[in-house]
Image (cartoon, rainbow over all chains, first blue to last red):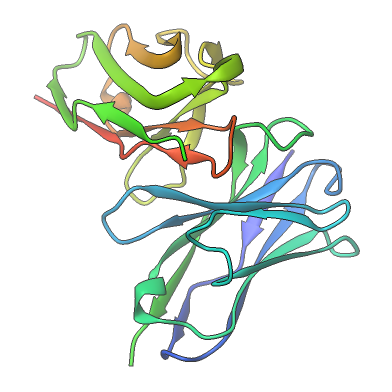
Amino acid sequence: EVQLVQSGAEVKKPGESLMISCKASGYSFTTYWIGWVRQMPGKGLEWMGIIYPGDSGTRYSPSFQGQVTFSADKSTNTAFLQWNSLKASDTAMYYCARHMAPRPTAGFDYWGQGTLVTVSS
Amino acid sequence: EIVLTQSPGTLSLSPGERATLSCRASQSVSSSYLAWYQQKPGQAPRLLIYGASSRAIGIPDRFSGSGSGTDFTLTISRLEPEDFAVYYCQQYVSSPRTFGQGTRLEIK
């Protein structure tokens, strides 16, 4: 059974760093792209970008390029989303999701449960 | 960037009725690389339709997708109580992949 299990909710102060995780199981982690999706409170879905765990190749949305960093650890089948300096506007639910096919152009068929990030002074 | 515009913003219908949701793209979505997702409060989105018209695994056949180019439609033939949710379309043909702003389907 394919599962994506995300790390727990975080409360941080502006300027702090953060890394959240997405642990995959039930399939070949290095074969499928994993994406990150932001949902701000009461708002819609925003595509942040994708990472290919096989070679850690990444594609970022221009809106998030330079603001976040994707990484992946093949030894633990875990993808990561990292911020170096959080802002209050980063407060949101963040989802990881798996591409439904082993190619960069695909929809997301499995989703993590989401990680709520709250940034407040 | 391909902008997806969903309409209506909110759709009020009763169980048993037919729902028709629209997703219009600012540029052609080639190869029909378009998906539909359902999101209920407090839950992650769920894939309903991919390739514009193919149902994902486990999705009831009352859900159907159609369209090509710039105009796509999600149809729910007979609404069940559990279908009231927010629906998003997404194109995955070009970067950045983009989502529509969503259609809220509410009980009338």
